[in-house]
Each structure stands twice: as structure tokens, then as C-alpha cells.
Image 1 (cartoon, rainbow, N blue to C red):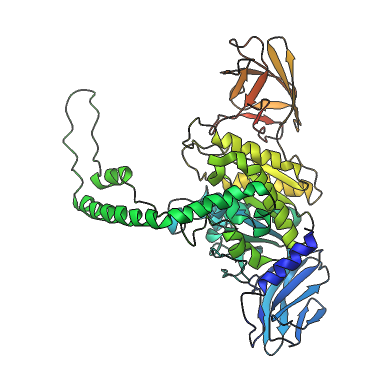
Image 2 (cartoon, rainbow, N blue to C red):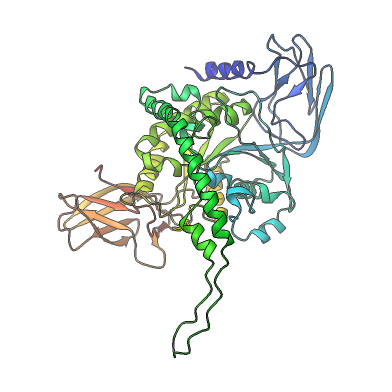
Length: 538
């Protein structure tokens, strides 16, 4: 199916869900303070009565449209030059809508799960105790009226939706920036400081969600192998009534036990023993201790759940089509780690479909390769396989990944150093989109050659030579024909690495950072971390 055909289908789908209205309305991304994409055709669309003439005026351009039988209208503005001066955009039909302070610059869609949803400052809900590093200083310094953010409210839809609620476009200030996606904001700040143009970030993200929820129906139908996704979800729906009844029972029991545990006062600290060298005891909260051992039961997945295949594309991406963008940023994968073998095909299909639906060619698509985190799984390697699936997806054109293997927190799935994540994504954009020559990728496996009892590993992107931070190279393993891996040592020889282990006299395979939370300290001269890799396919 061609990109233009998918775009037409998306536009038709948008017109099926609402009846025509008496007044002219605009699509959800068109609000005061919006950022429009420079240097490419800009669609502007909405609804009005069938046959009503709609006029759009902006930046010296005047366009007219007449809604079809479905009440939908769309106009296309010619490519716009950069504009840092806010300008009114006017839409006139039976009524007049005037949007104020519209600027023209670079627009990036930011999507994924919790590490993209993660805001600069703590927020109610799951983020109550999470915030970016140096939050107070970051908020105080956020005087960037040309960096603008719009949050798409979380919504699940069974069919492609036409509209969605948003928080409206907000310029970055100490008052607003706390609610911005942290990764998106730090990315935008880096670009804005370098390019000097407005940067808009469209934040459509939802924590704890899998890639299949963000895939369009067309993407899920594009490969027979994806039937497994639908079959799993059908089984989940079939199991839901019994699972929900069990949940209700468990929740009632937990609620009663929770009330009793809260009512028990914490024990007072005992008088310290006078024995020389004895540790001083500290008080323990009985309730907190109980809560750690008895977490609140979670409801089962069911109707309207954000895990619904295509549910988040329908509810949170489709309403944005075909807004003009420069590209997309993606931080997701944790929820798919238990089934990492599926991820590459699903992820690649999602990217290709998003590009087709937006109808703007091979939009740049950059993602974050998962950070180091001690996820609980059978062999401690599910994240390694997920990272490999992400790396394989670089075979698609106009893609790139920011490696985060060295800046995570093994004990926290939501590491706070979102500044560096944003910076590394910005390096990709600077080099691959904006024509600025910068190193944007760390050492990447290129090949390995047997040299006696060692393997010499070659890399691309080893500019400035290989560097091991603070210690000799860590997280290396090699194996012989028996396929048993042993911890190995690595000796740097300019832009190659000589790997060996006493227990392996005839090595045939080498791995680097091949676990959930490795101590990964290999980088290039620009300080960018090496991409985790393995040479085997075992």
C-alpha cells in the first residue's frame, strides 16, 4: 500500500467519527502558541458545515476550502520561512477563529512509554517521586519562549479517532516546563540553542505500554506474523471477566488488611545498647514495611486498556495526522523486553506505517536504545535482546539511536539523567538532519578476527580511538565452540579491541554489554558509548 493511499485512508477515517458542526473548528494541534514546521508544505484542517467556504490566512498566504459531505476541510500552506515573531493565524467560515502567537520552526513528535512521558519535574500519579536531575536549576533556567510543548492527553480508541484533548501549546518557562517531557525538552533546548529557531515538541506518550499499542491497524495487518499479537489480546479479553472478579476479591481483602496495617503505630526506637561498638537501632515503620511486602493488587488488562493493539495509535497518533513534522523521537521497549524476539519486526512496521500515514516521506526517526536496568527475568539478558532488536532496526533509512547503556540506574527503570539522553538524540538530529558535522554515535561493531587465543574486534565510529572510562574495559565475554561464555579482558589497540580469557584458548564468539545492567565503559574519543553487541546468533 502506497504512502499516499495510506494518507488518504487516514484522512477518510478521521471524518467518520463526528457529524458536521455548525461552526468552523480546528484539529487539536492548532492552538495559541503553536509551532508550524518550516520549509515544507503545512496542512491545516478541521470541520465545518458541508459546502461552507472556509478561509485560512497566515503569513501573507490565503487559502480556501469547501468541506465535503463528511464536513472535513483541509488547506495546504506553501512552505514557510522561519519566524520567531508570533503571528496570528485566522480561520473564517460562519465564525472566525484567531490563533495568537504562532511561530515557524522545527517540530518533533515525542512518543513512547514512561521514560518519554517522564517530566522535568515530579507529577501526580506514577511520577510522584520521579524528576529529572538538577530539577530546581533546570526549572529556574527555563526561559525559552521559542521552545514550545503540547501534551496529548492519554486516550485509547478502538477505531482511528479524529480528535483528542491536549494541554495546548505552552512556551517553556519556569512556570510550565515542569510538565514537559524531559527527554523532549532537553533535546529541544539543545537544538534551539544551536539553530536559533523555534522548536516545538508534541508529547504523545503513555508509561508502561507496548509497541503494538502504538502501531496502526494497517501496520498490524502488514505481516501475517503479527496475528500472534491479536490472538494474545483476544485471549486476554476472554480471560478478563474471571480475572476482574479475582482482582475485585483480592483488592477487597487488601483494602481491609491495608486499613488494619495503617492503624498499627510504628514501634518506638529502643534504648541503645551500651555495649561498646554495638550499632544504634533505628525505628522501623510497621506500615511501610507491610506495604513493601503487600503491594496494592493491579487490575487486569481489559477493555479500554492502553495495551490494546492499535489503541494508542488510534487515540493519540491518528488525531495528529497529517501535521507537518521534521521528525520523531521514540523512547520505548521496556514493556516488550519479555518478548524481545518479536520487537524488531513490530518496531520496523510501526515506523514505516507512521511515515506512510503522515505522508511526508521517510521522516527522520530516532530512538533511545534501552538504558542499563536490572530487570528481573530468567537469565538477566532480556534487555540485551531488546537492545539488539532496536539496533537491527537501523536498517531502515533515516533512522538513528542514542545509546543509554552507560547512563541508566540499575535499580530504577526511570533514570534521572534525561539531559544526556536529550543531548545524544540532538546529536543525531544535528548531524543527520541539520547538516552539522558532529559525532553522533559511539563505537559500533564492524567485525572480529581470530588471532591465536584472542579475538580482535573492529569498530566503526571509533573517532579519536577507543576509550575505557575509569577501569579496563568491562562487560566483555568470549566463548569457544562449546558456546560457554567466560568473562574476558579487553586490550585497546587504537580503534580495535583485543579480547581474551584464560579459560578460552580457541575463541569463536565475543559479546559486549550483553546483559540487562552491564557495567559498560567502552566509548570513543567523543565520549559516546559503544553499542552493545554479540557476534554469535546463539
